[in-house]
Image (cartoon, rainbow, N blue to C red; front, side, top):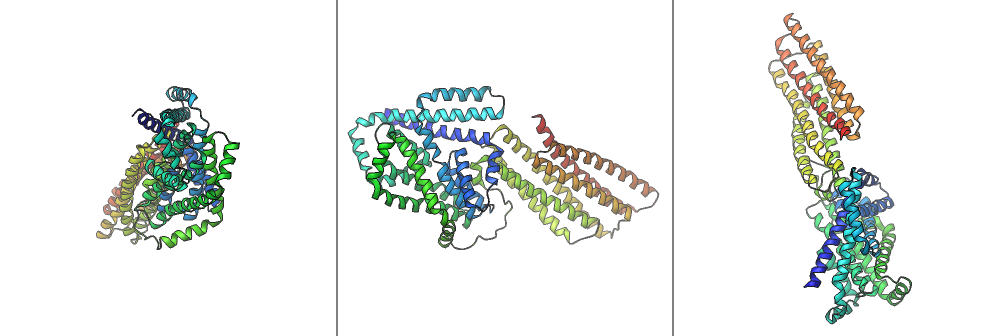
Amino acid sequence: MEIAMKVICGLGLFMYGMALMGEGLQKAAGSKLKAIVGALTQSTFRGILVGALVTCLIQSSSATTVMVVGFVNAKIMTLNQAVGVIMGANIGTTMTSFIIALNLGQYSPILVGVGTVFYLIGKTKSTKSLGESFLGFGLLFLGIMMLEQGLKPLSDNQMFSNFMKQLNSPFLGLIIGVIATTILQSSSATVGIMQALGMQGLMHIGAAFPMLLGTNIGSTTTAILSSLGAHKTAKRAALIHFLFNLVGSILFMIVFLIIKPWYVAFMENNIPSLPTQIAISHLAFNLLNTIIFYPFTNALVKVTEKIIPGIDKDEEQVSIYLDNRILQTPAIALGQAIKEMERMSDMVKTSLKEAENLIVYGDRAKFDTIMQREALINKMQSEITSYLIELSHSPLSDEQHKDVDDLFYMISDIERCGDHIKNIAELLEDIDKDSIKFDDVLREQMKNMFEECSLSFETSIRAFVGRDSDLAREVFKIEDHVDEMEAEYRETHIRRLSNKYTDAPPGIIFLDCISNLERVSDHSNNIATYVVNRENV
């Protein structure tokens, strides 16, 4: 019972430390992580580098591949790009085994202490994130040390010794690696247990290598499960991960069975530490597997297209960039939410221009389009809000939390702009019912208001996306000008009415129109305020 408790506690501490270290590194990376993923091109090689780097940062190849499935499902990454990232994720995940091989368990209290101090007294967000990483680093080694202590008595246990001898069967080792990784949902955790067993002399590299191959197969289950309910292309991305690891494991198992005596002798004679032997073997397999498959990435894509035939149905999608799978990587998910917000704002800009054509120039063909787009904007607000709520529960840095809060308010302002544009479009009913005609003065004044409000809205969005406070202050100036214009136009209109230069019915429509436009400018001003307020945080 005592052994089981130590092993379970050690494994729990190890996995929590690994997750905490990954969260700290993610927060420290912040927007840099978005830039890394944004560097993806059609180049498979660059995708490999990105996949390896992202996995090193988030400490989970499963999270990286699930993120890839989400990107492919959202149609913002092609299958060819996905192949490279998946290959890179396999390489990046080996970093954890090298960290464990350092065997810094005796220093774990120091690492935990340093991390705690940095986290508690750190004044900057980066210092706190660094502290979190150190804390996770220390807990990881503390967990490995507890695993070692828990497994130590088993070296004298005859039953356990007999079981470990059974692992000399490569195929049994492979199966155990698959099952353990599927249950733990972490290949790093399985490899960590193997290294802890090695530290106690309970495992040798001949038994460990087939298990390593099994962990690579077992690690694909997370992406496969996440692809259920996704588009066919996303399912193919998960299948690519599975085939890449499965075929590679089979090939290397065959090679291993042929060269096993030589390989074991080479490792034991040149690398005395078994944890290091495991780490090097883990890296060697994933690196060589990537090199072997690199020329055949297109063929791999075609094979998955044969296994999963057909094309994705063009279902009506409200959001393009949002996918809950990407939430596992909060920094990336935040970037996707901002992209969706930009898309929503583009719709508002288009509707604003069409409303001008409708009211000022009488282009009635735009009415239905504006109404349909407004309904879509409302749905987008709902979806983005739900996504942000989920994202707010993720491990985010203080700056990222502020971004999420600002986005909550911002999409509400954008949606309200859409409502005011809809109000303007609906004035067409009164225009047609009373056969209203605008004179040149009213038409020119409405045109001026539309232009200024469009400028205000577009500038506020650019200021938010670019975090440009100087640009945001330009919005304040435009808003002041819009307020002055509305007041002046109202006063001018009343004078013209009293002098009978214009009629009342067009005037009512005119006043409603410029009032709604002024409210659009108000909401643009709100967006600019969020940007300027960030300067004082």
